[in-house]
Length: 100
Image (cartoon, rainbow, N blue to C red; front, side, top):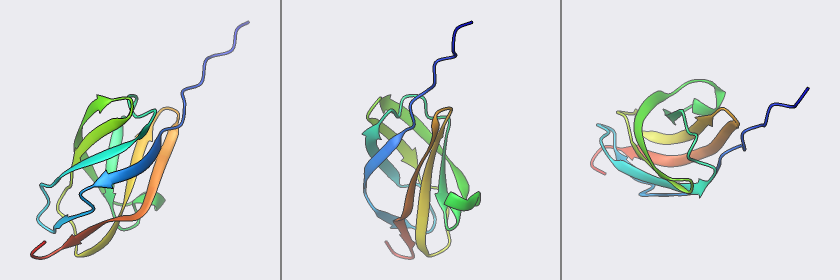
């Protein structure tokens, strides 16, 4: 009996830009590693604990994805990159604000 290979856990190391308007629509480049198996990107206060809003995203490479920030309440938002290998959590990594 052979073991099922495990998927690597994604790693998120940086994002650009780090802020955008509360209306959403900002393309946010997330860099790191093992991102090519990303299934979902979630933004929002409490996203690390199961809250937040699902963002549309494009996988550029194993080290880069581009997510479109959804509309948010003003303030700091977590970003969670979800994949079969686990989650990459970025606590309070994105700032949504009026007029940004």
